[in-house]
Length: 260
Length: 102
Image (cartoon, rainbow over all chains, first blue to last red; front, side, top):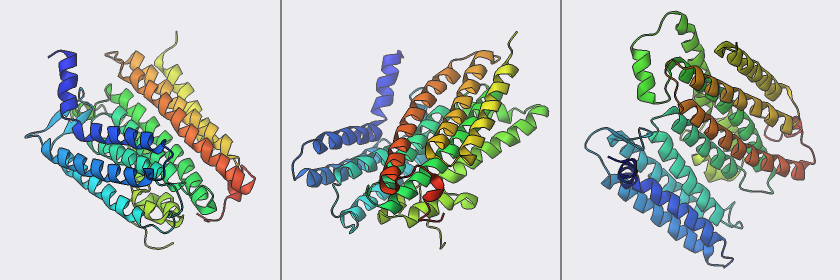
């Protein structure tokens, strides 16, 4: 297969993501038309894109595990499950925001664009098969959620939560990135299955300490970003600040800390 | 003769300085400068490993380009938020943003 054929083949199996990306651009374009109906159009557009992407994700279900884009993205039944789950969650967030009291006076089109971006990047994060792709998707999720937390521009709490989230988030991704680069140095490849093969074939004993340090660095970053147990402070800050429904898509938030 | 150890030493020093800067500064812009140092230490690592690997490959260099782009995007968003903080509270100092106490 020539590289072009390979790219076309990958693109054919990448339809849900491409659709979300196209819808995101379209929402931005419609938003630039300063008409009163643009919010309603964008809402319909976003909902339609999410539903269509969910249907496409179900249709592109592969028979067995395979990778596309030269091993950057996986495509298997687990990937399809996560795509449908994440798209469903975004649809719920969209419907909840339509009724949000706190955001009733604001222009919502930008929020729809952000929601589509966060869905797209969550999907890429769930299907990443290469540490470069993993980092890229994680940062896209982060940057869009920083903006989502700060959506109420004049609100002090919203601004402060976003500032704290972005500073903690930036440091923790920096730490994680440092760990990922050391992992690349240790194994000589950025592909996750490649790293697994190198690690499974056994490392010399002097590399073991390095591996523990790498694991610590990477889990420190990931722990914060996914709001896992010891590092829930960022999630708590975001959930206590306003645009309330945004807590669902805060730091990849699915859980809600009990109380402060 | 410059070996990989020299690069790794520089990168570890940058990482330590960046972490220290991010943790000890009061001014939000200085904290962001610390974050930049951390990301650039990772870039040095990537390029050095890419060059000195037993089988040299370009994966690391490609990764480093992505890291540079992402760092620019992240800092743009962060500076916008710091600017909003300044507009609301008339200060860039982080310890004065304490409404959430978290």
